[in-house]
Length: 237
Image 1 (cartoon, one colour):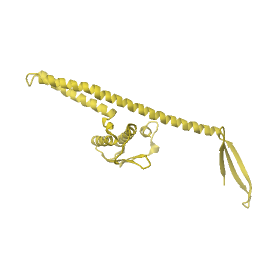
Image 2 (tube, rainbow, N blue to C red):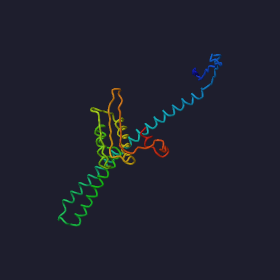
Image 3 (tube, helix red, strand yellow):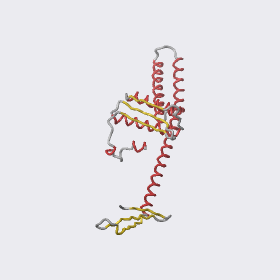
């Protein structure tokens, strides 16, 4: 049997190992003690933990700033550019209604311009939604219902969403959950070959929220992932 003991003072760490020595009859004859100064190792471990903690904080702050910028840009696009395009569309319709004749070349030109403005308005809405869906302001339940419906509509993959009744998240946590599900569904659509996805969000009595995302796809070998080129899972972590 070997026994290791660690002790420290505010400045140093030491590891002491005791190894019993026995004779041919199995009787204890002596104890060999070995000592090692592991202060530097402990300092390196502490620095590594601090570095990881700072990296997590930096990543969280970067994501928060990115989300705030998305929200700002989406608002500017939707409110400012959207209103200008809507005003332009109304003026085109008003001008067209005041033109004499039903088949004039000018009326046809205005109709073409109106259709172009309509497509532009829809494009602006799509861009704003891709940056930050307005439905997030209605709560995580509405946001996930919208996200899963859009995913099914675009991918054809069935998506079953189960939400525990009464779940309420603040804006920061709701955004985190939404982005996790969004990235997961994106991976399912691109890589899994699945035709069914199950998403469940529930609240534990311990105070934690539990998010589960499963699919019936092919899966993958995590060891085969090149971490230098694949950042989806790292980003979700």
